[in-house]
Image (tube, rainbow, N blue to C red; front, side, top):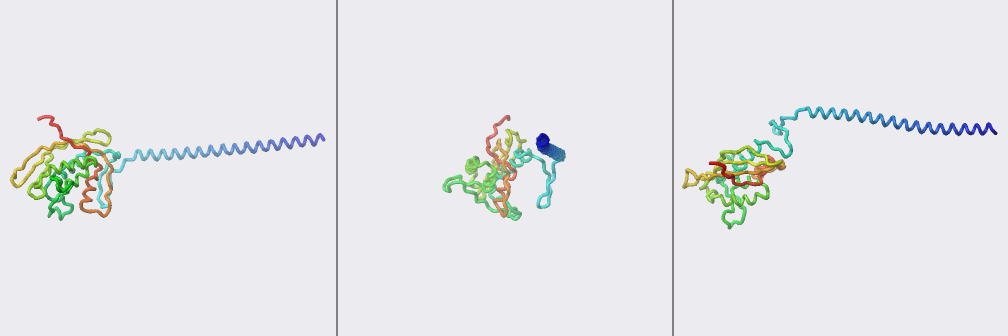
Length: 259
């Protein structure tokens, strides 16, 4: 009786020890596996860091090939950054297109350059009102203005435009004398001072009448639109006007600083 009791106690002890060993073995395997995964993750992070370091040291591309086959130089810029030459060129092109009133449509093809078409103007208000038309070039360039500024500025241009422009008897030419370097106001905003003259020619005054046109132009960075396919004529010009990713939101008279 005593030997059977002793034997039963030994069996219970062995079973308990076997269960404890099985549980400990499982925990050990789990710990080893987890440690192994940590090591693999660590090496992967090291590899990723090395790849990013190489990309950081790699010089950005400065040459881009277009679909036409031509190549252009580029520079890395932020989304709201524009270079000074781009800003100055945008101001010069926009103001020249807006303020040159020749009586002819801006050419869109080589054939139109050789034989320009007469500009009958764009109506911006009621036809019975006087001073309700602007030139087609001014209307096209006005798409470089912000929407809240464009309508009022077009009304001012209509009041300034001589009726003789649409009859072929008067021409107005903008002569930029100086376009100063852009001054950054804040992130994505600049102002540019332009010194220019408006010269008015008509049949009775071939020497021309010169009017100072000195302005301070405020502009900001915007998203450049993508030109859709299968467009031509005026639509192409409108998209080209905003291709620089800039828009003018204010224009004011430049105060005379000195003689």
